[in-house]
Length: 155
Image 1: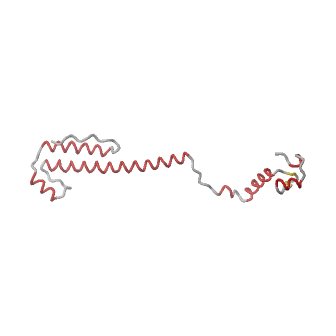
Image 2 (image 1 turned 120 degrees about the vertical axis):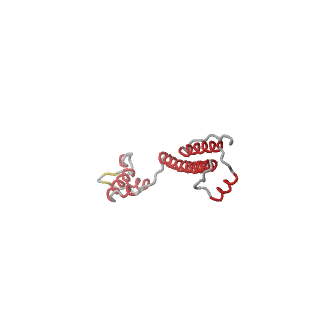
Image 3 (image 1 turned 180 degrees about the vertical axis):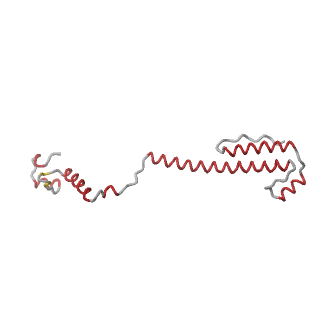
């Protein structure tokens, strides 16, 4: 933009049209020049006060990082649930493996064991079945993100 005196306007016309015009360092300047020079001088006067106020900026990268963090959190909860379930299934089959072999399971309720021992007799086929199932569920607990094949029929 050219200075006002070069375009043929006098000072009073510039005052009416553009607002008050000041002579800056001995020359008549446009409003945009005055504003840009004022901003430059005020930022140096305030010691980078404008830079101290930081605005939170959201970007696609930050949003994608946030989505990834939330997804990892949700996935870890699902993996934890699968691990707990598979560990309980392995414990269940270990108890029944010991019970069917005639041993007293250490971590089973004594009332359940005494009732089961009175009714059951040792069976080798059930011991083999519960042994296979226990190993299957223990392996599944080590990789809870993998799917588990269906259980074979009980003998």
